[in-house]
Length: 91
Image (tube, rainbow, N blue to C red; front, side, top):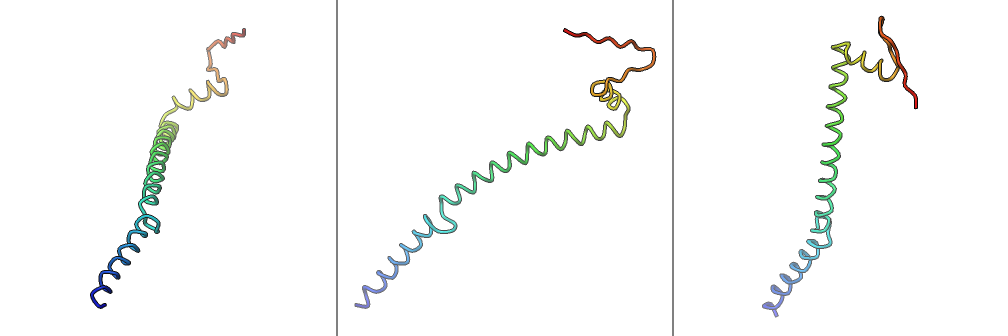
């Protein structure tokens, strides 16, 4: 009888470990799902980083030079310099 207890205990332990591998907290499907979420988040972070870099460059241009300010004023506010003629074309 003592010879059967050890293999039975080992088999039970193996079944418990195998169940944890497939259904537990750190299971294979859970790790795959978390890996997919991580990849999605990394892509979103990369897009946000590009947008932040673009905004930082625009802020730097606005602080350093008047060309960007003048361009924005012309496009958004319709600024006209002295000695310029404003022409509006309508359809």
